[in-house]
Image: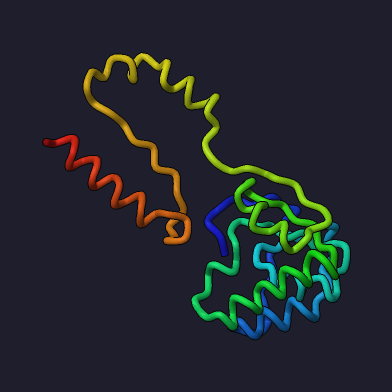
Amino acid sequence: KTSSNLDPNIDLKRVPLRGKLGTILFTITTRFPADIILVDIVIMACFASMRNYKKVVYLAQDYDVAYYSSKFLQNLIKLAYGLAFAILKIPVLVESQALLVKLVKFKPRRYIITPVGIDLTFYKKILANKYVNNKQKQFFILLAVFDDYRKGIDVAQKAIVELLKIRHE
């Protein structure tokens, strides 16, 4: 279930078996009736391509190797990158140039950089706003993060606390 209003063309399916193993088995065995299957975990992109070859696109939001402290698991994920890009030729949407630098060693054949971040042209308009110009010595902070330590929310929260300490001195 989701709290968002979904387009009527979107069909949500429940994975029949619970847990990680159920998700993996469902992904391996299902031929999805879609033109494109967007997957954001590299090993799952490999699994999905077994029955959906040439439909899978890997959405690289982070370097999956960094999720694991175990050298064995890190090497397994590196192997998955090699399998996905060099052998299965899965195309990849990369969210930053910095991430692409980490992924090129696995030789992706097709990739597009789709940068995420703050649209500076939009926020320049905000800086010209009468409120911002008349706020005297006050300041405002825009915090746009996911509630996930890998996305930096813990660092952002600490930074806000430190900025408030400095501000009140």
